[in-house]
Image 1: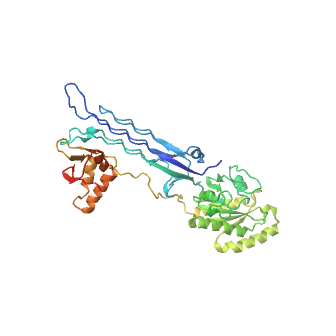
Image 2: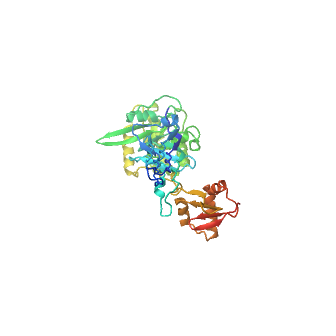
Image 3: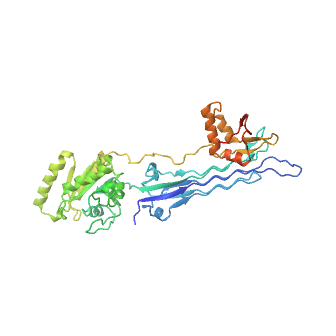
Length: 432
C-alpha cells in the first residue's frame, strides 16, 4: 500500500530533576549542599532518508517518544541524558501541526537533521542555589517538562513535471514509455493508485523528473474519492502536462476534460492552476489521419489564444512522444527554476525559560504566623513585576495561584492575617 499521509504522536524526553542533598562527612556535621543535576531529556529529530518513498511505517507505529533524562543524585552525581529518537522520512515530506494545520517544516530540500521537539533541560541540584543569605537551600530545580504533540506527515512528491488527467487516458503508458518507471497498467478506472516517478533522459546530460499523478475525478479539490491525496503531489511540479483521450474511446471530450481538470486545480490552489502547461492529445493511433487533422484544428482554435501548446501523440506506439518531451524540456527552461517549498508557519517547541526554576514554601523558624516563599523562580518574577501597581500585584497573585504556591501555603496551615515574606516584601494573607 502506498501511504502519503500519517498522523503521529511525538514526545520529547522530560529533563531529570535536580537533587537535594548535603555532604555527610566525618567531623563535619553540617556539610554543604551536594545535590547533582538532572540529565537532559532526549530530542525528537527528523531526517530525510532517500531510500524511503512512502510513509507506511508511520501508519504502523503511531507514537514516538524520546527518553527521559535521569534525576541527579547526591555527591554531585549528574543524571544521564535521555536518548534522542530519530524519525526517518522520505524526501518531500511536509510536517504540520495536527491541531492548526500549519506547516512546521518542509523536509524537501533539507539535508541536515531537523529538531522537531527539544528535550527538557535537566534541573539544577541544590548546590547551585547557595547564596550569602541561603547557605543550605533545601530545594532543587525540577527537570523541564516533556512536550507532546500530534503532527501530520504529508508526502508531496518532488518532480519537475506532473502528468495530470482523468483516469484511463494513458498517463501510466506514457511514463512507462519515456522512463524506467514500471506502473501497473490496465484498462479500467483508477488502475493507478500510486504516484510514479521516473527520469526522462534526452541524452547529453539532459534530463528531468516526471510524475504520473493518479487520475483526477470531478470534486477532487473537495476531497471526493482520493482527490486531495493525489492533488497534493502536483504542488511541487514546475510544469503540468494534461494527458487527454483524443480518440474519445470512452466518449470523453478532450476540451471539456481539460477545463474540468483546470477547474479542480484552481479550486485546490490558484497558484497551481497558473503553472506552465502543455496538452498531450493521446490515443491517436486508434483514429484516422483525417480525424486527427480535424481534432487538432479544433484544439488549436481553442487553446492557441490561451498560449497552451497541443501535441498529438500515441503513448502506445511512441508516435509524437519525442516532440512532446522536447517541448516539455523547453518549457522547463523558461519556468521558474527555484524548488517549490512550503514556508514554516508555526513552532511547536516554545518554552518559558523560567518554567522550571525552583522555589520553596515553609514556615519561618523564629517568627510565629509567618511563612516564607523563596527561590530563583520567585526572584525572577519579582524582578519584572511592579507590586506597587494594582495590575502588577494582581498578576503576581495569579502567578502564585497558577504555580500552586497558594495551595502550599494553605497546606501548611496559613490563616487569615498571617504574614507571607518574599525577599524583602511582606503581605498579610487572606483567603479569597
